[in-house]
Image 1: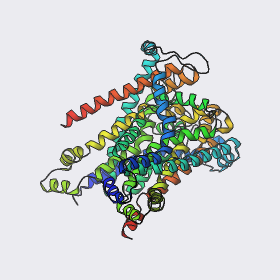
Image 2: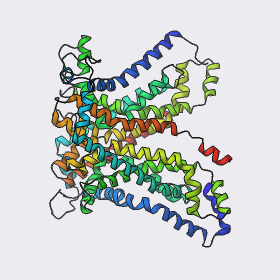
Image 3: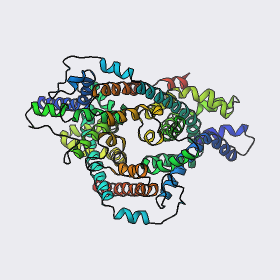
Image 4: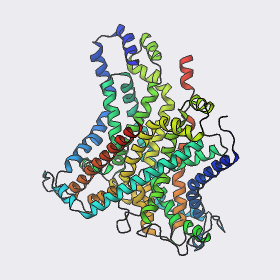
Length: 279
Length: 308
């Protein structure tokens, strides 16, 4: 190839790559290690990366913690609802943005950009007042509505690139066969968009699952608390006493995001579209 | 484009004038998204800007009065507010710069045919998938004064004699928090830059190499200019995200010790939801927008001039 192989430079590159990997991995390894340690070893003044007496007690305790289980259920509900509703709402909008006038498209894309720049603190105060007025404050549906609107810009952005990739000849063919716009949207466009809808839904799910700030403001009753909120409160109140269960619960709470993230990567390149045009 | 081609084939079966029909259809398709966006996003944003010019308070049924620039006059004389913005700018500039430099290094490495590349790429992506609350919890464990791994390693290596309370000491809290910010935000920067690198045509590098350009020269004259637009975009986005960041630092330090990590978003949050000063907090939000836009404008101008 291009680079004349200089062994020193090659070695330096590997060293640099290893340094990156250590920086990226060691906090995660340390959290795993903490999760596997008993209460005494967690607070040892001579911390070791490998636990002397590994135990799964912390995970057992995390599963036995009623408010953690409740929080996981709450998070699941809100995240699933957010993913579903966001995608259902975004699909026709993305289609309209791509296939109709360019003015709307420009306004929408401009809005997507603006929504990234504004600090949430500016939007949360009026939102708090609006939710209060609609009696949606301190409720999971209220939080879901906020998540829906919050993930919509990015989901719309993702979906419209998928829609734009669908050749309009397919729709023209359906139109000459006498199919109306809605029929075309349902029977021609939507099947081709399945990978895109899945990716968008996963994205909405993860952003709701991971979100903290809105939950902090919108939810007050502890029984409605989502996982990030419960874990953050755990940090505040329990001090160093129960670090092991905290680490175990944090690991478990990360799993859905990790799994979905892995799934998302594979789905990004799908041959479905090519098949649709050829066949 | 596609709009035109779809339109022309459809003209044969149109009953209404095409433009009017299209508009109605587009509108119908957009309505389900428009309503929630307007009610829960556009309207609150406008109202938020407006509240910044009022005396609105939480919970009290006091008449909300437009008080012009009173909030901003008060902000000017609030030393804690100034401190918070100073911290916010230090945090955002340092975090963004480190994210960029480290992200560029990692992207360059991932763009080469090195072994372990796949593992490194996966590792780089994981922090992106993690909830910020959990990133914060994880680093709190790393930074624990007595039982944390960081002090443990440093003492084993005899680099430090007494344990440091990383998140609790005045001098170390902000740098410690910046390290976490860099860790948490490295992924999007790296991925964007890697995408930019992979978009550079290989024959540019080959031609330069044939002409005898060293790899440093190739970086300076090919890679760097070709990355310009990606750099502009990701630095701007990173800066905005960092300056407006909340959850990570809230869980790490809650702004402490003694306000040393009190980012503007945390300051405004306390003002609004601890003390109930909605109008005053919204005014801070407005100033945050101005600061972000102003600094980005300076950055863009500098970028354009230095590369023109």
